[in-house]
Length: 119
Image 1 (cartoon, rainbow, N blue to C red):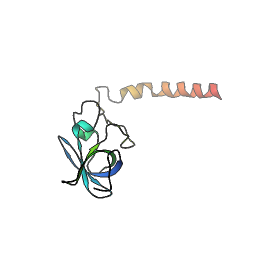
Image 2: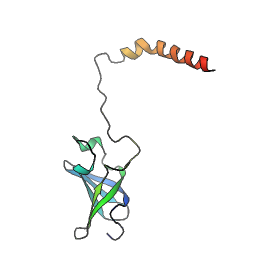
Image 3: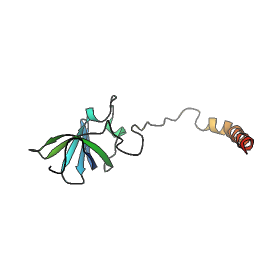
Image 4: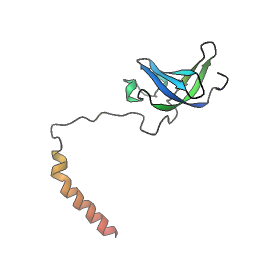
C-alpha cells in the first residue's frame, strides 16, 4: 500500500460488480472498492450502466486501509474512461425505421444543398 497516497489516480481492472460498489484489481498491486456513493454525483440506479466486468478504468484514491490492504476509491470527480459516464438504453418505438425511411431523401438533399452553398 506504500505505492499509493490519497489523491492519486490509479488504473485498475474491474473484477467484481455488486449492488453496493465496484471492485478493482490495481496495476501496482492491491485492490480497491468504489462504493456506490462514489460512482456519480447523481443517483445510481444500476452500477452496470457505468462499468463493465473486466473493463480497465481509472479511479481516484480517497482513502487507504493498510490493515486490510485495500483502497477506498472514487470515479465521480474524474474522467474514468473515454466513453460517456452513463450509457442509456435505446428503446425501439412503434415506428421502427419508418421515420428514417420517410425522411432520408429529404435530409440528404438538405445537406447537399448546404454543402453546395458553402462551396
